[in-house]
Length: 133
Image 1 (cartoon, rainbow, N blue to C red):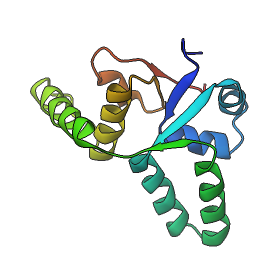
Image 2 (image 1 turned 90 degrees about the vertical axis):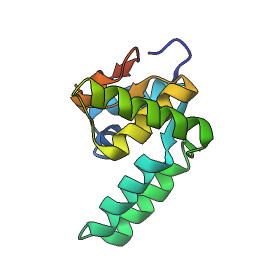
Image 3 (image 1 turned 60 degrees about the vertical axis):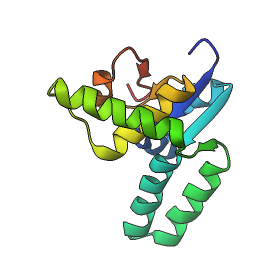
Image 4 (image 1 turned 180 degrees about the vertical axis):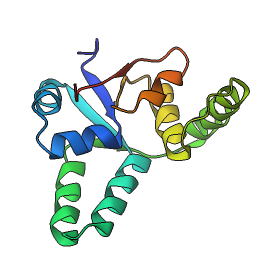
């Protein structure tokens, strides 16, 4: 667990929790506080709207969102996003657009990012953990 027990959850981690991945469920239940980026929350809502069980999945996303603190983009996150996108472009290691916003949020709030997406390891000098293993 991170030193503070506080974590920013990526979309992949929330999906693992909602699918009852034992490791993800256990780790999340032991965390002091869970955060989610409004960007990741939007990805979850998109998935729910696209699903064959739309109403059920929308309810699940809404209920999960109530268990987290939702972090919204602000000027500091926007600047960090710009820096990070440029840094990764120059290094020839870009990551998907939404994930840049999520990573910038983790950096600004100094929160470990929980994700099973390997490309987050490209974010310089940051802690990424995987609860789905």
